[in-house]
Length: 222
Ligand code: DX5
Ligand code: ZN
Image: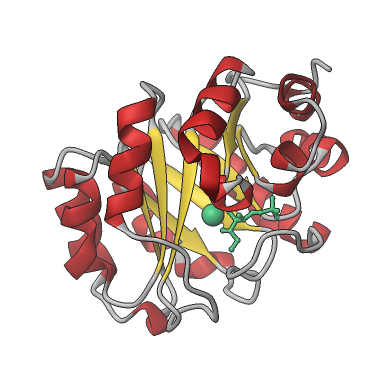
């Protein structure tokens, strides 16, 4: 059933920030495909993480694609700064609380030379992203409410993953389907079985004793 290679994107939100360069090197050496960077502004979500400066620092320490997830208001204003900091893909949220024109922001992300991606929260219906599916490279289906690492996976979200994969197959579109939140070996398998091909994971990698084993297990080859 798996049509594309499964990609694993460790979220450095769960890394040891006092050793960010080493943590980045370690996950790269352990087989990570992308590095996921969670940007939180204390408005769109109830937490504050880090900004373009940290993204630029990580950029200096890896050749892997940087997958930047903007959980912020006015992502249209900030996306160019993350592109400049070295992002390869930039994900914005579809919810009105993000306060931007989604179509225009996606175009601006493209214009800045990045892959354009869209995300939806657990409470947001799949229909909200449908109008944009032809204008994105990646759909990020949140499997927890964004804001914090270490939360429990919401299996109900698999319905959206399935619908996204059905749409992708019907169109033959080049769309990556990514899941984020509570991903471990077990929930990764469920997500893959439902059609996800990119797995974001913070806790299950960085809190494991062995990054290589943790990443291989997520991919289903552990
Ligand atoms: C949640 C973030 C996630 C988070 C995942 O708001 O978008 O990327 O870091 O962390 P875990 O894997 O611990 O659920
Ligand atoms: Zn994320």
